[in-house]
Length: 146
Length: 409
Image: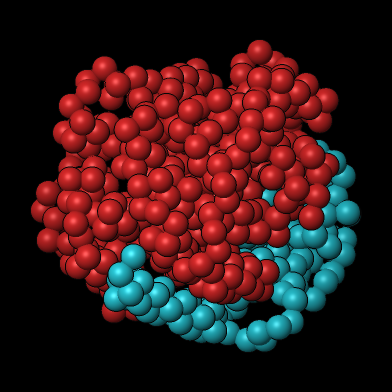
């Protein structure tokens, strides 16, 4: 293999390596502390799913197997119609429960149809038919009063 | 850790591929990488068959299946001599170290891992089957329920071994897939290119894919698995005149990993027809992919969770062509002044054998064209392109580099 060809290939590979190192650096620090979640450094800022990823493993032991549960970040204390990030994270983090969309805890839903458990990310959930079961720095667990 | 060992155990389903004469000629690293890739196809097909006959995939049933596959494997066959150490060794090491760092500090995680690849794999493991009630649940439709099942099934297999799903394990499996891709390429290219050149191009491919994976954040998602199959298929057909059997398995794997895999199969078959003019072999090469995708589509139709594949009939928006070209060309720079494309194109300065490079070049061009074709079916494609094109263009980048390596022969 001619030296010039080998040199060109090596330079290209080294440039790509430098770009890789730069890319990893721009994901933000800390650079050598073990991350708490798998989304900790996907961007320089905090990822939309991070709180749910920290909260749900704490909530998981408190939920009965097969329980119906939803997960969302309340808007002005109430359940939104949808919350893609937190809802789908819950589907993955609560494999032994049945995760249903946030609208199942919306105001106006008849009491028998309200989802049994609500995981509220960050902000409190103020629906009068729910009582708080547990609180964590990243959010709270609620259960419907029936 | 046990979960990652579970992923590696998939290789046991692929040792039978060592019966293919071409695989028998490659070095140990490539042979193991190819066995791993074929094992992924094998284990996924077995788990799908289990679902069809209502046999749960437990440790016990999967172990029996593994035993049957191992019984058919020529495990005592001698390896070809190992690739001598030399050009690119340091780059290889740096690529693997940096990538391991990026994965273990959560710098390359794909959002789709937590949104659907992971949940599907986990749910299949918990249900001990492909859980159609989960896939057909209307509120989970954003999870692309009819997406091909190979990767979630590999995840479910590893979870069965480890008795639980591992999110970090799913991330780390990207390192295994990257290493397997490059080892397979080097081993397949070595017979034509010689040790030095195969090593040098393998190191460049490793750096190219590692940067592309980090930039487009694909850890835990389907792309590293797709690239493994695509690289094996293209390299087997480019560097060997008897690569059809191996390519057929790899094409089946690609088609069963991502929706784009089906387009890849069609493009490779057309490229093969144009360059080799062997109609029967071309059709035969596509048969495993057609059987797997066809049976999956029938399964999805029967269980009412058809979604992405139903979009095939949607109207094209040709008026978006200019916009698509603009956004694609901007995103294609990979934030590095088009360095990945330069890495694929500059080595053509040393091209001697354009004839051998024809197939991967046609594949690269076809993949770019098919990407544009896909985007033409979106009504507001800017967000879609911005969020996906860096991942999708990794396939033509790989094909371009394989072409450059082939041309250097």
